[in-house]
Every structure is written in structure tokens, then in C-alpha cells.
Image (tube, rainbow, N blue to C red; front, side):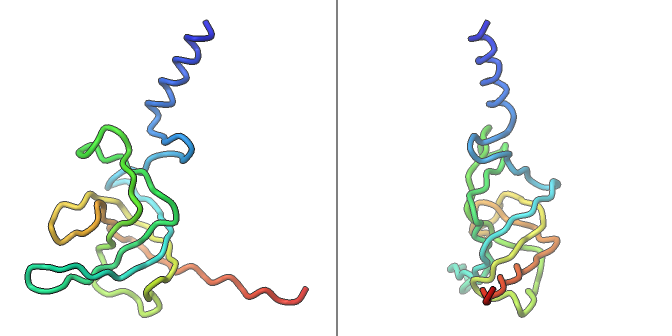
Length: 134
């Protein structure tokens, strides 16, 4: 009886869409998600010159359920940002931001990361106040 219970619990954990020690997998568009990380502007060679794109480097590895790639969740450490033609001037290289949007798999040669985030909103994180006297 004990082996059956453990086997059932193991099967449920395997099928729950979770990564042990991490949590749930993120889903692709139309499901919205919020990710936090550091904003980088990277340059990639393109056919007619250079592509300069915004990339969010995640604070921790995200696991994305992408059924076209795998039946299991796929690890991602960064994603290209798309959906805005011009970023606010306060968003500079190495700015910590929280991005709200939907993940989609990269499908063209001009998308340079495994996943792309269609941005709905992007918010810079406020810097922590400097430590002061107590």
C-alpha cells in the first residue's frame, strides 16, 4: 500500500507542470506573466548591418512549457523584448526592471533568444534607499 501511495504521489508531481525545487512552469501566449531581471541592449549581426535589441536577463532561471520544443518545461535565462518601438529614457543598460507580458517562442532569424516577451508593461525597480543612521 505504501509503495502504491508513493508511486501515485510521484506520478502526480511529474504531471503537475512543476519543476522540483523551482515551482510552476510558465506558459506561452495568451497567458500573461511577470518577470524580473536586468535590462541589456545587445547587438547582433544582421544581413544588412547590426540589430540592437533589448534583452531581459532573468534574476533566476525560468522554466517555460513550450510543447513545440519539448514535452517538458524548457529552461530560459533571458528573453528578447518586443512590442515597444521606443523605450522610456530612464531604461538604460543594466536597469533592473519588472516586465509584464506574454512569452512567445522565437520564430524568425531576427529574434536572437529562445523566447520573446511581448511587453504589456515595463517598470523600473526603485533603488533601495541608502542605509542611514538609526
